[in-house]
Image 1: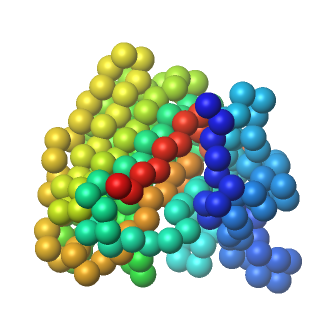
Image 2: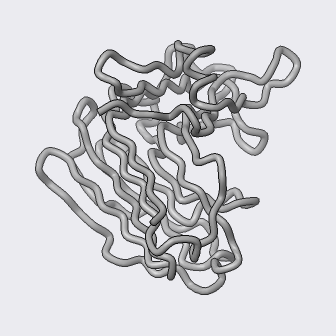
Length: 224
């Protein structure tokens, strides 16, 4: 099945301009046309996301990404169920062997409600039950997710703030069960993110060929 990212917003590991080093954001259709070296549709309809470790980053970090996100934020109670389902394959990863692959992001805040990692062959996550909670420790969800293996990551969030994360790979699956967000989130708005976001800072000595690459073969976003 072809992956359609045309109307999503893509954060690229390339600068806005020669005078502005901040990471460029474009619609999917624009990014596919202008930057095929880091974002490309493959023959089978899947999309390849490439994030060199050394490149353009957002203002608040020294970490690069090639990441899709929904263009509009939404409140919890705007739907009974919010769902982000990705089937992806990591074919390459940075020297730290850690990337963010999915997020439940919060408008005007640097810390997502949920952040999902691929970390040295494992899928792990960090969940903030409360908006004012500090960054949580990462918890392993699924082991044995090697490079080159297709895996699924599914986030489901009810309009009442009940969040479930499920991961599957090579016939094995694991779920967090219900992670209940408290009432401090009720006034906030959210969007889903996915792709690859390097979890290592680049420096002047970072190798030019260090990078993370994922193939996104299925993407389903629903708010019903």
